[in-house]
Amino acid sequence: MSLTLRVLLGLILGLGLGGILAAFAPGAVDPALAIAEPVGGMWLDALRMTIVPLIFSLLVVGMSQAATTARGGGIAGQAFGLFLVLLIVSSIASLAAMSGLLSLFPVPADQAAALRATAPDVSQALKDNPSAATLIRGFIPTNPVAAAAEGAMAPLVFFALIFGAAASRISPELRDHLTTVFEAVIQTMLVVVRWILWLGPIGVFALGMVVGAKAGAGAAGTLLGYIIMASSMGAMITVIAFVLAVVFGGVSPLTLGRAVGPALAVAFSTQSSLASLPAMVEGVRNLGVPERVAGVVLPLAVSLFRFTSPAVNFAAAVYSAHIFGIHFDAVTLAIGVAVALAVSVASVGLPGQITFIASVGAICAAMGIPLGILPLLLAVEVIPDIGRTVGNVMGDMAVTLVVNRRTSKSGPGHTAP
Figure 1 (cartoon, rainbow, N blue to C red):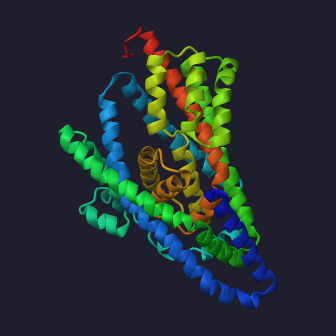
Figure 2: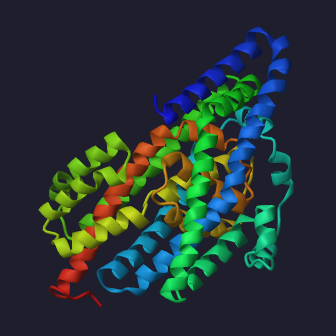
Figure 3: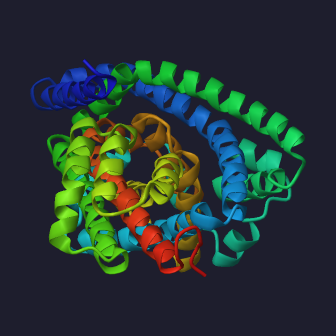
């Protein structure tokens, strides 16, 4: 059984046991929670422990590589510029769509209150409400080490981006040495995360028992609501990518549907963009994209671009904020979008569970959203992850078609102005 399914099973058993104890053996609830709460809390703290070093190292390496690619110009430069534009579109579309969905279908107040009671860090997060001026001023860290120690994610992300961009400007030999160090940190932290995730079924079982005992059957409905909304974000991005390919890629909807069908089927069944790459190459080739374009854009897209990541990650963050009754001003939302963009590029290539922890955890930390229910959302991420992969594959093929149309207008061997 895969880790994802074991974690999901742990959540189901935990919720079920907690609900059964609350309904039929209320006297056993407190002794059970006295064990479950520390176990679940320790596992959650272990996850938090990995976020700062992993995100910082990913951003330094990713920004250095991205800056080098963007300066390269040509087909790769055009593709990278389009990646950034579409990631911004993904974030804004998700923010607008999630706000609308939660206005139409809010989480019932009693269920939200019960879930809030299970999160150990909610009181401090709700108490901290800095002004817009403080948030803007705090975006540039006077002491990056202190920002890392305090878990101040927005200034830490800003410093990592500046550091990575500057690293792309030093001599290749020194840059390679520097990125090698941070790549080693990434690989080391991934080993730590995998150890923690190996214990995920136990940690999620304990957290699920707490939620089941305190929130009852309503917790399952709340998680189902998240699954539907997060999956809807993936579907929305898939549609946006399809429209982009039709309008700016110059392909008819019917022709495009036939060409992308096999790649989307592989994405749906494997939940892997990399596994879908051969089918993507064949699909765009059937649409007339030459090797000189497909051979550059598609590998670059698979390694640097996840169209759905900001959308689905933002969905998780906004859903968590809704549970805790947290509302944001424009500055906080802008910071969240900026962090979502940065971590979506930096975390490409990581396993799904690690991507969720690193990306959504960073967004929540930057926006002051408690992380307490993220493990529960992680446990049910297996379903939204299908939509993530399908949207990413559709986005990769759409970008390839758009870049091909631009370059073909300029003639073979040239790039569009």
